[in-house]
Amino acid sequence: MFKVNLHLLEGCNFHCRTCFAHFDSRRTLSVMEWKHIIDNLYKSGKVNAINFAGGEPMLYAHLGELIKYVYSLNMKVSIITNGSLMTNKWLSKYAQYIDMIGFSIDSFDKNNSIKMGRCSCKNQVFGRDEFLNIYPELLKHNIKIKINTVVNRFNYQEQFSKQLEGLKIDRWKVLKMKAFDNGKFNNRDLEISMEEFNDFVKANPYINRIVEDSMVNSYFVVDANGNLLDNSPNSYGSVGSLLEEDFDSVFNRFNFDEDLYNSRYVKVNKQKVA
Image: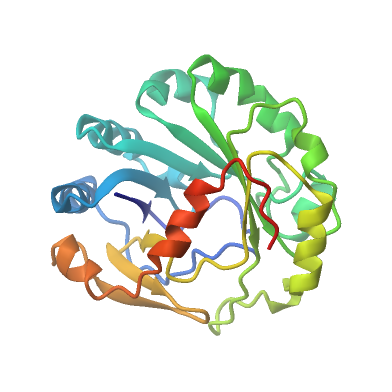
């Protein structure tokens, strides 16, 4: 059984230069269209978990409705967010339906966050203080906590794991930045070598850490147009539309690396070094 990432929209209130979600999406799907896609995934019998992503999923007006809908189908619900729009009030309303919330945090240094664009147009960041403001509410509702960190030119020398000491983090995912240059977006100046990535890994041990130096064809990514994407090393291409075809048909054309997909879930309690 698989988890599928639904990128509800490409828009975001942050402008992170490490973000891989640049799909050139043409429009925002309606809540009924997303429910059709969710039904498609559910009926396949291959999917038991949905992760809502973006852009920033909390900008999608009907996120709460979709969370409750996925929960009603007995599938697990998770979110990956930059955290800046999440409040205790929102959590008290929807926490009962959510299994895990992942926070994209690439740095606990405000200046580094701003340098990599992990901030709003007014240079608001989501760092340790902001995380700690909602942390008790996450524990109160027994929501699993994940942190995603993309290692790049600005943060590869940080002592990141020390900032997590004493916190109940169920999964810390460390990813090597994927460079993009599609004519509109270019972040190659943030690239680091594998040696530099490994230096970060060695300097930042953590019991619930997962290290990923490649995401190629090991994630189910559905873009904001409803297309399952083939995330090849240099670009994204549509495998097929989940609005127009059943998931089984599209899945059969997907160059999927199931071993790599499974590896991130069986090594949660091991300190894997790339």
